[in-house]
Length: 377
Ligand SMILES: Nc1nc2c(ncn2[C@@H]2O[C@H](COP(=O)(O)OP(=O)(O)OP(=O)(O)O)[C@@H](O)[C@H]2O)c(=O)[nH]1
Ligand SMILES: [Mg+2]
Image 1 (tube, rainbow, N blue to C red):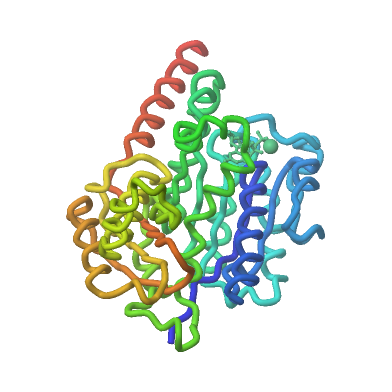
Image 2: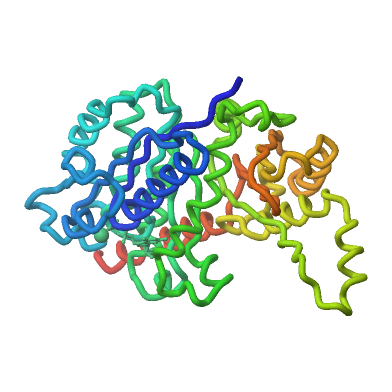
């Protein structure tokens, strides 16, 4: 018998709050489709009241939508000044700690997941501070961050984007067990129509968590898989800089045009394993931030698909594939017999030794600081 991972989610700032809202939808879907709980509760924290009010799924009382900052912040937030947000968060951290205490089933949560955009003010400045104070009071539970990196146009045009991002990542890395990094720009690069559509980007950011959070569920006999992925597998994988993704096999269409019938027949004969490999390749393409898998110290993959198409050989084949990309990674895996037609592969690459983008933020932020110091002297 296993059990699936249950999170306590806290979104900070505009981006963090909207992503928490999206995780709430994910939980609703898990209950509806699979009758399981993946999220114990969600909180949204912001200096900006309008952003809090605009949320749809986080409970609307003031113990779930928590305003920090009072007069100091004004009702519109801290206008990108992340140091101000950090100071406010230090002063109001107890509001968050008390709200957590009042969550009825909080002890059932396996981990905390705090979410923020790196380039803004409120989320960026407060996520390390709130993470630290939660950690001091809940040492028994792992604490993760999900940090959203800015679009390229923001890096170019917003003076503080890189400085805020570098500071946020550095401080967060000191007080968390792992940081999921998500690059906004990746979603635009893949699909230009997403440029102005944060809602759709948010859906894509959260989607790869679905099967991973569900996978350890206690199942009916008909769903017993060959290898169950459970909470322990996930917590033992998550460490330091982390990326996540999910890929899906192409649907095998039934109604092929007549001339292609022979080809279709041949494709049909392809072993199930090609579907699994196809999904794995798509997942590697979709990593939430581009990185070099060779740098991963730990990795996890999960195959979700029709139970009768899955077998140990396929799981092992996928393991071999990932092992060639991430030869140094300690690997964990599971299969999750759910759904029909297509196969999904979810991957986590963790304990990444270096991440180019983070390195670049650090060195560019250092330049910004020395420029500021020069102009001041
Ligand atoms: N993926 C995604 N990114 C977002 C969203 N909202 C903002 N961002 C990104 O997050 C960064 C800005 O962070 P915000 O969350 O808006 O800022 P904040 O934390 O509210 O801070 P202030 O408003 O400055 O007090 C930018 O890089 C945005 O592109 C969102 O809903 N989804
Ligand atoms: Mg804001």
